[in-house]
Image (cartoon, rainbow, N blue to C red; front, side):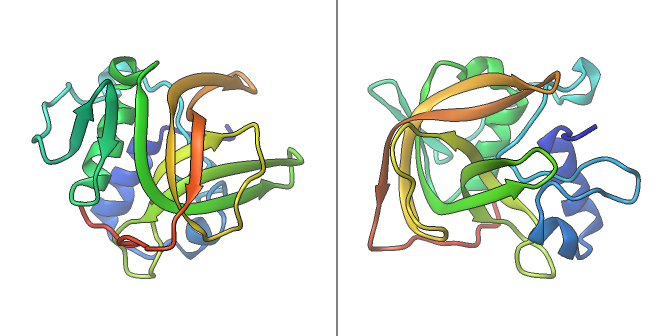
Length: 184
């Protein structure tokens, strides 16, 4: 299995609190159990009993103005996890947030994946990433640029698995950087 449910991986990473050097360097690296560790930019539809019931998050997580869900810095991880856990509530909605532009090449597939992320808590710096895979029809910025991403959440299928990504309507490089490391 090339990809697994992101929320499950994040929960395990947070619960164990151990170093994941391999996962930090390669978000699709094989774990000891043969599954693939992926960044929060990837997901597959989880089995119904593996997904927690929808929980209303505090207003500080995301601001919805004019139909746009804006993910803020204060509760970044909580809101991105809510999107993955409750994708059906967000599919087709416009999401706006800031983060680090990231490129990951999958040598086995000969494919590149693009994401806008922030680093989560851990002992080794970037043990977990929160954010989304992005698709953009224009030129991409440089690796590690701080960007504002705005796009519609969509689901796509690859190798028989379903994943989430933002189909971008804008991707703007910003000069002022926000918090690269988030804990909530």
